[in-house]
Image (cartoon, rainbow over all chains, first blue to last red):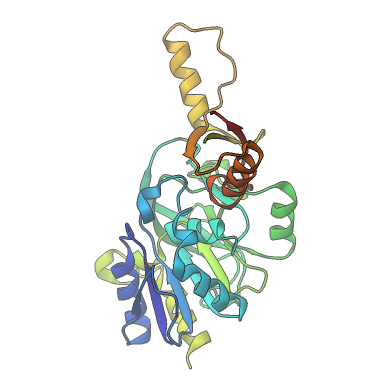
Length: 230
Length: 80
């Protein structure tokens, strides 16, 4: 699986992502600069976490209009797989590649702690390593992770099985008490209609080695390799 | 020509910043304060002399970048 990681000014999680990808693929991911206009031959494009362009205007708003995003959009439209984590999720919504938007956390605080995620949709390139209902742990670190969308969009996401993950407790219970940031329906991650673009706020790439405290995030990367191995 | 674009969260979208400002104002004794909404003002200096054109360009900028129509509304106004 050939993976490329897009680096914007202010991106800071690209090396975490590269380590997680290398652990699964055995090969090094290509770093792509936001000013690039052409993508090399890739199976997966990753928009990693960070604070692209200083979060000015809105998180991800500037990055969504970077030169490389024209190429990422064409890649996605041609059926390519795109993963956006944290700021990468914000960029994908700002670019219109995923529905909804991410607002300031309902409690106004920047949150940095582990959370549990319940897998809502199995069998995609991203979630084939889990079964629906599985719960895994992931670190989260964001100030703007409060997922919102209009009622019709939320109903469509639910009806079409496009919710990837919801914030839960360790037992898989999903309610207001397990919602860290006010997200509608506890939504932590969503898919595009063709299930090939995934955005999520928490960081599975930061839990892929026992030295990190666990390997809960590994199924995401191992599953991608199985699905996209050329 | 200067144009002012005001961006506000849509009605019905929770505005935690506005809420926090409201709480602070109550703490300061401004008990008459009800709902508070916080937004953003962007002033643009445009190389343009026609008011109508300046306004329509500013609106195009708001639609493309300055506002996110999923969560925000905007209003553009020519200043001078």
